[in-house]
Amino acid sequence: MVYSDRVLQAARIIMSRALIFVAVGVSAQSPCDSPRKQDLLKCAAQEQAAAQKDLTRYLRESFRILGGSSSAALALRKAQSAWEQFVTADCQAEYEWSGAGEREIQAAFCRAHHVKNRVHELWERYLRASVTELSEPARSPEE
Image 1 (cartoon, rainbow, N blue to C red):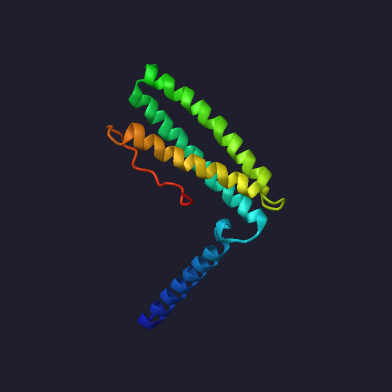
Image 2 (tube, helix red, strand yellow):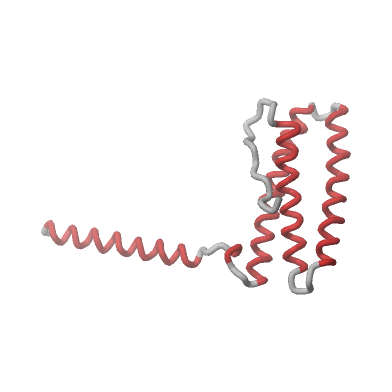
């Protein structure tokens, strides 16, 4: 194979991979960038799932720092239960208030918003001054 043939072959490989990359990038567009209700519901569900996963991690770490069965940990369990009830009621109110076409979307984003802020609140109260591998989480942008 002549040198120019190798260069041409390499160029073809690079171009085919670039086309695959572009095609994958277009098809992998975030549902959060779409105006369609179905996509926004998917976006809200993804945000809510990610926030809930963070909440579980930060709560577990908070309980570890507080000593699991200490009076402070028991108080946090009680507060967390009350917080869950508040979020459920608050997002239900938002669901009832929202227009018919937006109810599910608003309720899902409401929960994600509350959970993200709760994660930050846990970090601020219990983890900021503690030895932990968890870093400061982002707050919900709606705040």
